[in-house]
Image (spheres, helix red, strand yellow):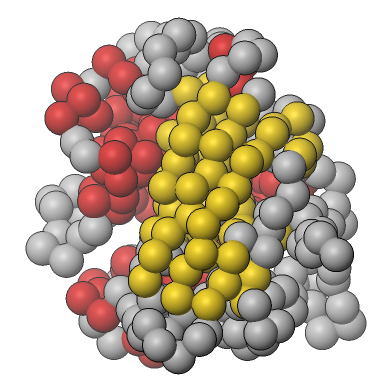
Length: 324
């Protein structure tokens, strides 16, 4: 029988939700940390929480979060080079809840991201390519807003000179720095790409496709494809990965572990370990598995990943052809 992982497009909010529904509020103050690890944690949390808040709002999901919504995101965004894990996690939580409120309640005001991500404009020695790109993208987006220039992140020399992860972060940061509402209103930096490689947008029209390699040793792989809520996407997914060193017979195909096991600390702990999963921006992950068609639950950049909680001992990859 064909095994399909149902997309987890609806956020289930239990009685233990740590952010309760409340009256919209706005606080323009931004905390300043002398501890760089806490500063990084707050920045990452705010960015991820704002993505999640926007998506919940756009999908008509009730406002609220469960504890593991930020815990899982913090766990996978943490890198030992940032410093003390406890410091990172605590400030990530604060940033995530604030960002979620701002994203959900339309408080994405020009200048807000600059106040948070512009506090340390110098590149950090432990900054990852995506983070460096995001930070520069925020500043570039705000500069274009001040100049009343139509949005176009591809115009930046920094963007053109970066690797794929840097460019991914730059585009995301540019949208936030420019202001997502304004970014969408003026066309969202949309310039059709009729080629078969490079950045793609589902607005390019039917008949387009990209083939993506999803390594088992990386939690999330950017596809370079910007999707729009309600788009119907076609998937052809194949491959097999080892979830432990070869020889242990702990293998998975795109539908998940062949032994039927789960991974308690994976992005989707109730789904099969090793399954192919997806997300849009840093929103709620959802199961893709061996499904051949999905409807995009939100607008943003599409990522694919592997549903596992320990990736360093994995090997192999999935191949995914995405068409629209």
